[in-house]
Image (cartoon, rainbow, N blue to C red; front, side, top):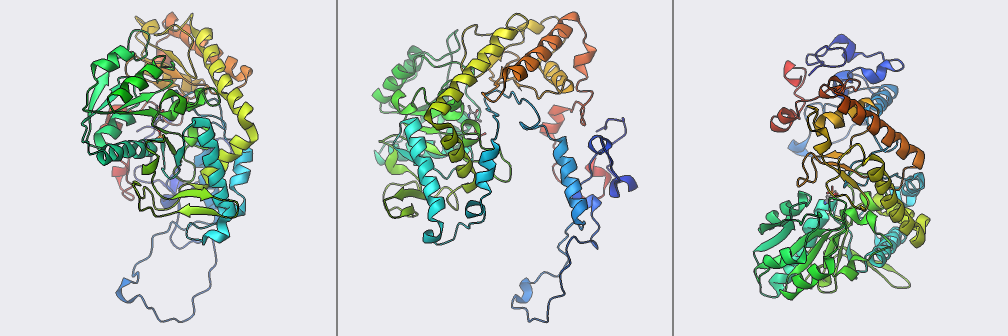
Amino acid sequence: MLNNQGRPTTGGVSEEALHPTFTGNRALQIEEPLIFEIGRPANTGVDLDEPAQFESKLSNLERNAPIGLPGLSEPETVRHFVRLSAKNYSIDAGIFPLGSCTMKHNARLNEKMARLPGFADIHPLQPLFSVQGAIDVIQQLVVWLRELTGMPAIAITPKAGAHGELCGMMAIKAALAARGEQRTTVLVPESAHGTNPATAALLGYQIKSIVARDDGTVSVEEVRKHLSSDVAAIMLTNPNTCGLFERDVLAIADAIHDVGAYFYADGANFNAMVGKVRPGDLGVDAMHINLHKTFSTPHGGGGPVAGPFALSERLAPFVPVPYVTADANLAQLIEHSDGASLGRMSAFHGQMGMYVRALAYMLSHGNDGMKQASEDAVLSANYIRVSLSDVMSLPFDRTCMHEALFDDRWLEGTGITTLDFAKAMIDEGFHPMSIYFPLVVHGAMLIEPTESESKISLDQFIGALRELAAAAKRGDKDRFVGAPYHAPRQRLDETRAARSPVLRWAGHSPAIS
Ligand SMILES: *Cc1c(COP(=O)(O)O)cnc(C)c1O
């Protein structure tokens, strides 16, 4: 791997890397060593008194070698992490147009609420009477999610969209088992996110892929062709990953239910319809909700995210523990169930900090505000679609929902690929859109601006893409094929990075390069 100056990165660690003296912008350009490479074991950021004489009760469990902490002063530590953070591209740094990921603004009000000591400093094993406020927040979040989904039961504990998806499908499997049925097959449209077939496969189902019709959506006729008493469920994303609303959704739900199967909805794109459509009214039996996509909590950031899921009346008995109930006096965390519950899907009650942030978003926007956010997200995506439609090609030339999908036909004959185009965007200071996803569209470029962007910011983004598109068509190939030229990391060998990743620091050995 080479750095900006064409020098090999510090495999063997140089003196400069070990004792960096960074100033100004250079701090952002240079390779940042690992904290273990900067640290010297003898150093410490805190002065601790020598412990008094004590008799160890740990017998042979006592540690007998140093713990291997890096050893830095407080300013050295802070500077290391600030330098690293400045290398990140984030929604706080600029538009983050990844399709299907809904990278929206994380409001500072949410952060302020999540840091309140009554939420931030509590412990999951505290007695319930001492955390009634926190339990009440979870309960309020559940009430909002019920209202917005039109579905009666909400399970809060899953740690990601994919985890919620797994739990939702487990509820379906459990419901079938309770009926004494062992169905074998799950239907998944070919445009689906990879987590859908992965989830079904993990639960032992065979996957039957459903092809879309020419307009990019799934037809009820196509679904009917695959229906039988062996089908456990369909996993349908709506709006789908082409950014299109599945128009046959009601008929598909009926057809699925007619053969005794369940309708799993992938709710990752819920931001396109919050306050406009309730999935429960579309016949959905189970749906996960990515709080980090739809309800503005950070993607990651200090721990896992939260992917609660909603269940229909028929699946509600299978909701995992713990869940929250409340009467006038006391919010209760139900930790055990003697009924049909799936049981426990995580150690505790989930991601408290994310619940607080999501509820802060809901309360600060209100019903009307969230509906407006969905409408603005759709408007922004269509603004981008129309503004670029004369220079880039659209696989489905019609109004989209929250994301605009382009293909690579417009690059034909230029020698430039979707990947090259995306990398050149980095040199213009933009994070690329999702590329090569969904798989059904050749050289896909999927742009989801979200409602967070002002018209000025959308215009800057569109302007940059138009200028790049013109350069591509002009044959300015060099600008693309080696890009990015101005990023701390240049083009990686992505195949090698995927096939033989080096993920572990192995000490000061040349192997780490
Ligand atoms: C993001 C996403 C998922 C998975 O959610 P994670 O929170 O990333 O696990 C599933 N389906 C679709 C369509 C998505 O966009």
